[in-house]
Image 1 (tube, one colour):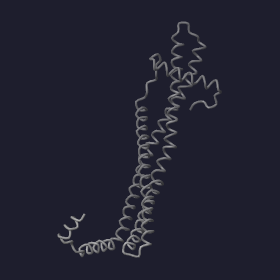
Image 2 (cartoon, rainbow, N blue to C red):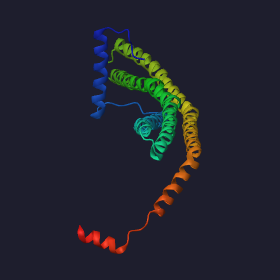
Image 3 (cartoon, rainbow, N blue to C red):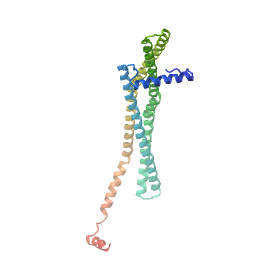
Length: 265
């Protein structure tokens, strides 16, 4: 970790060293520590996992919001049917009352689905993003800044030892600084790798669990919806038959009368 106990001037010196090393590297005037291939692989895997979580969380929120929006409109529709049905002492009024209650029940199931998605999928994913994944990124960024200091100290040591008029005291100082930074650099690199691997391990178990919970919630939702629709199906089919029978009993208009009505118009 960076030295949180450093004073203002020491922190400014630290930032200057990091910035100078970064500029020199970009200009090709300073060497950079080669990155360990396994460490790079770990970082790439972590990045892919982070992006996957961010995409899943974003799309799940959109899906949940769409369900919530549909639930609100569906509930409003049900209330309208119930209100209008109560004012009609006819077959239409009875049908609206019956179907309004079913529609309300369907929307209650949809509300339950939204709640389950939020509690068992969205919540845990967002917690991981805001917690462990965010912390891992912050440690990774600190490791990068420490690497700049480490390489700056290494280059300084190389510069002191390559001078013709070597100064033993300055070389000793450079060696001490390099040794201190190397120990911190190696320790933090291990911490970054461990944190990244821990996120990956959690993904393999927790994301599977969350996806299973999501699909189970959908299964329950559609099963309950079917059950509620099935309860009203006999009534629905009876109404359809009555409507078809009523339509068939209406006598067809005579061709002459139809032609006369057309001519009058």
